[in-house]
Length: 319
Image (cartoon, rainbow, N blue to C red; front, side, top):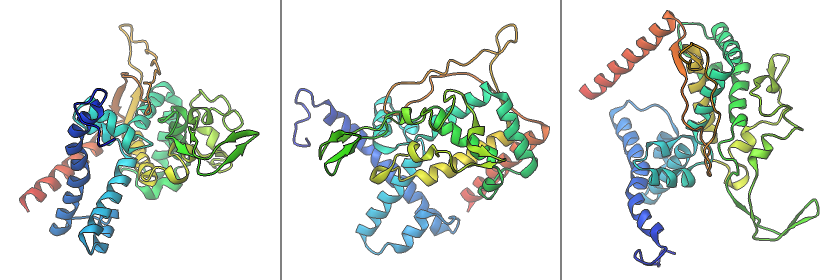
């Protein structure tokens, strides 16, 4: 299709692609160049990029390394939200990722505002394991089964990619008497998987307890990440990055903030609409909630961390 002239009727995609191309290159090249610069300054932390750089011997190796790092990062983050226009954001959403971290984060805020008792139980677990004077780290994850179950439920409750990404049947196949010819396009109904009553009772309810047994994660329950991130050769390359990011984000928010429903003029809670957008990537429609520091201690922690970050940024600039 690259041979179709841009002026040809119906070839708007060619004109759009010309505008998107510079932004795609920026998404690929600028983070890599930033990482290279950090390594030169001696301030880089160990990462996939630093390991790939150690293996680069030729210019072709570097191009492959850039592509690999970009795929993992874009596959696990909401890069599309940073793009400059609705047209480019739409292209980025479809092209770059199975799971959009932003959408899962939205589901989290909606759930915490709507189910305050679940929020309090997760915060109680964090208070016991982490305490009030630091943020959770990835090392705490195994000690926080309820928080982990809550994140699993966020992935299941409001599916980010309701129909996943299309696959192609490589060979002739048969499923329960239904013939699937070789070369068929197969679309997964992930929304239906997430509401399969064989695995999830009362699927419309936000219930982290469904993933727990005797206070620990119940691995006999179908893990939503097996479908939320895709599967097979089309599985999201940023799956593990996204899961780690979600744990760090959601546990830190629970540790430091209290989330509640907005109120009307009579100070009565206003329920959220829970409406989702339609498309390959499904987001919550805009909603409001109240976000406040949990206590004076957590507010102090937030401000201290902010000051430390600002000092580090100033030191880096001066260096």
